[in-house]
Length: 249
Image (tube, rainbow, N blue to C red; front, side, top):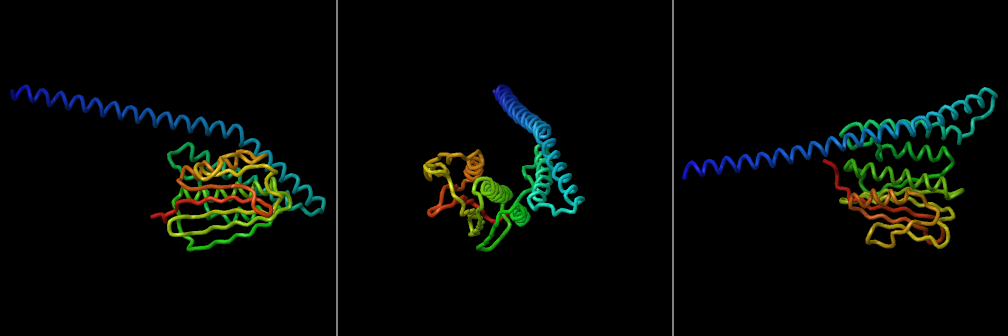
């Protein structure tokens, strides 16, 4: 009886070991495939974007150089293009390095907000920034999301709102961060519907909008937050995100 019991124990241990080995193999296979996919995306991004951004930077630099050589004032918009191109190249390099590693941080956050606003102003967009509440360190994913929302919203204002002014509001509360970007431009086309987080209203794309608003909503929803973007009463457009944001340890 004792021998039978020991044999049964050995069999159970063997089965458990096989199960652990199988689970470990599946995990390792999944990690390897994830790494391979990140490397594939990195290569595609490098091939498709790096050359184009480099050409933009070079052409803007040449145009600025020729203007100075002729004794002309370099248009501020041209300098903004040159700076934005250099910044895009920097961010692309950072993104590619992240894709090639296990680190999920893309190096962008609200610490760069001043630089972002300065570039928008240099490109001709008046921007006012207001911060309420106690500014504090945030979880990396929330910090990055907040920066990207402001970045995309200001880009949309520059592209679609004509001679508009924009305001950026950050409101810190103990458990959340509200990010709001308003402009006083013509707003969305007539008949357009607002886009919001699931469960907070119609999830429809405003007329003429690209994927930027969709991407912002997906980013906020993935963090468990709430998002809404749509025309304001009296004109203009508003983007608002409410992000769960406990202080980072």
